Length: 362
Image (cartoon, rainbow, N blue to C red; front, side):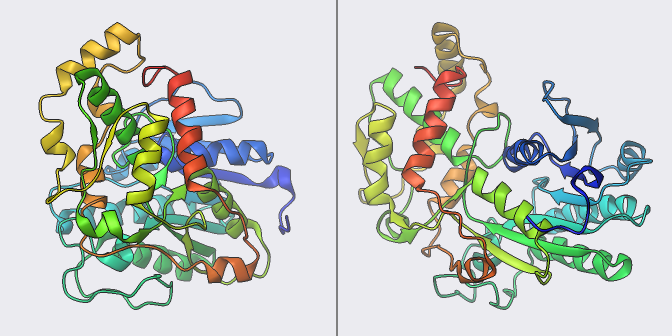
């Protein structure tokens, strides 16, 4: 790895360090010998090599207090806050980026900021998927922005302004649906499907695909959280890279009609595919809070609160997009990032971890 800083001089701030991407980044950075500070709202269990500071990212005073005196060389921004409307998403999430970068730029040591966004850059925000223009797949980073309001665009704008003002380099990482482990995460399909399967098996029901016909039959891809972490560190430390956005996906593509029965086999449930209409999880799993709590007690699971394990709304949104969704990876491959993850293997590893840690039944 080429870097202009001695390794022991690098200090990484991982914003959202308890989330699905932030946890993986902390692990990767520690493994590579970095000093790491995690910024989050809650205090996680102690992690070797990670110092935690807490703040409410939606409160500028809280951010200032948490980051006072901190002089990171690299910031990895993985956090977001879900609001009721896209206008609110824009206001709140843009301000989070702005406030963090204002504080971390003060020392003059900041060299690179990496920001996680995603496929909504190409298909539009929640509630407005594929409204108006529709981009052709595979999505390419040089596609112009859509005309609909989108908090990802507002976050990018804040990043670009701060970079111009303070002279640091940047990268944006447009991940697809992320496969990883993080309790309490708002966007976590792998854990959501595992919870769906556990509840379905306990009730003697099949494992029913919740999405539409487009997603069942169309081509898609996903992003392993470890690959995302490695790409972000690569972009932040490789000399000669321009400041730009990178699509971030595993490198394989699949159709859900192929993947669904294989996931069902891994989770020991009977698969049922698309038939006639979408059957969203918010409909399928209505009233599942108490059954999950009972299952957690019976199976001695670590998390009895279903909302901290599954996010029905997010998986429903992903699997009911009206257009197929997958990325072109030429830009990062040409620049030297050639990591590849088999998506089925990524699901397999996640489910093994969830069983081992007693998040789902063994």
